[in-house]
Amino acid sequence: MKDFFASVKFKVLLVVLVLLAGMMTYAAANGRLSAAPEELLGAVMVPLQRVTSAVSSAVEGFVDKYVRIDQIIAENEELTAENAALREQLVDYDLIKREVEQLRQAWEIKEEFPDRQIVNANVIGRDPMEKYYAFTIDKGSRHGIEVKDCVITAAGIVGRVIEVGPNYAKVATILDPSVSVGCMVSRTGDIGLVGGDGELAMEKLCAMTLLPRDTLAAAGDEVITTGEGGVFPKQLAVGTVKEVYLEPSGKSMVAVIEPYEDIESVRTVMVITEFTE
Image (cartoon, rainbow, N blue to C red; front, side, top):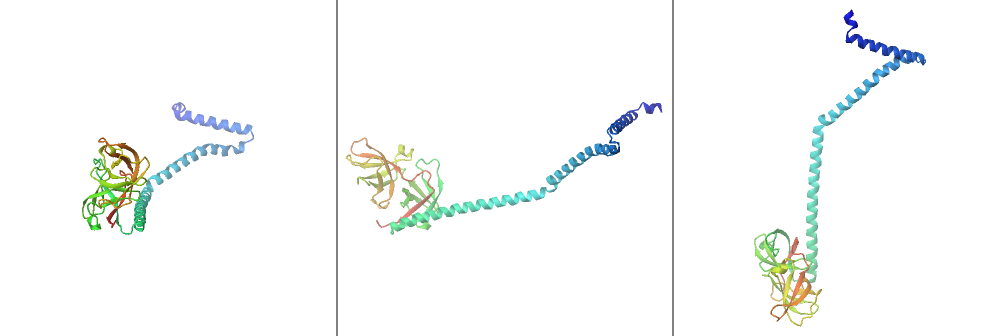
């Protein structure tokens, strides 16, 4: 018995009895003795309820995170598939929009020049090392395209075909020195040749050579094709004059031309396969 009174169990029991006696005394002093059992029960149960609630929330979280994982994965896969389908629809829309715009531009040219046969094409390749911005299109001999055919956009002339396969063609641009186009300054009527220049090509510009020394051509003048040579039809827009200077020999003038079309970034073109002018 002496060992029991000296044990930890006895000390804990003594503390509990003292606490109970204190609570009973406090309740009696405040006229709440009858409510003491309830308050004691509340004091014990509230912490237990909090623990129970926390455990319940943890269990629900576990269920949501692990038990429903298959459902979540399925929903994610469904959303991924829907996003892929929407992206495909957007690509189709862009392609259709581009084709419609090409047809509209070709129709406008046909309305003005009924004799011209036009093939719409898309740029499908570029050589990053090609300093004159040559490119490949997705139409070729199967579509009636031949070497030397003129390549344009609604904005203006782009270049000419230099190689043809069954379903592709390579195009040299007017920034290439190998391309030469008979042109005229529309305001003054002065005639010259527009072609590429190695230095000007770095600025996406070309040159109009063989202008007469007394030319009145000036910055801002429009340059169009004359139709000479039979490669490019007449009255195609080429670009505008940026400046005019005397060429080194002193025999003629040179005009720096800024093409209407951005040769470097052109994405769709029209190939004129036939014309009678």
